[in-house]
Image (tube, rainbow, N blue to C red; front, side, top):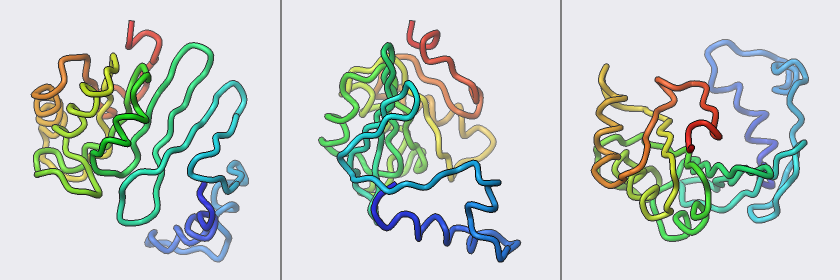
Length: 172
């Protein structure tokens, strides 16, 4: 996580209705280890390389490119669409993209499903995975996929219908 991120994560329990005196690490059963990293220096976790890149959001945030010897997944995090995001995602096999605004006009801090489609098209990826839906009704999945398809000609799935995605199978 970014410098200063430890304090943010440790304060996250204030967002939950049931409070605990235990620190956040205790709430996770000690399964998570919090380490700070820079916006630009990658880390290796097992066989995966995680390369963060800065994004545009109301608070400091990063996207990530996660890769192994065969596949690259770009994760946008919360951000608006901008040229640096396209550059960071170019060369990935798939993009896991925020689509929280669904159909609303683009904003600097969040993307619509159309923005996600444009990002995937411009980055030249094989697969667009839409996630982070915070608006929309029962048909949010179909609506988001249709709007992304207005700007992207590749394969589109959502984390709603495809909670487990085998990247190797999905892009072949």
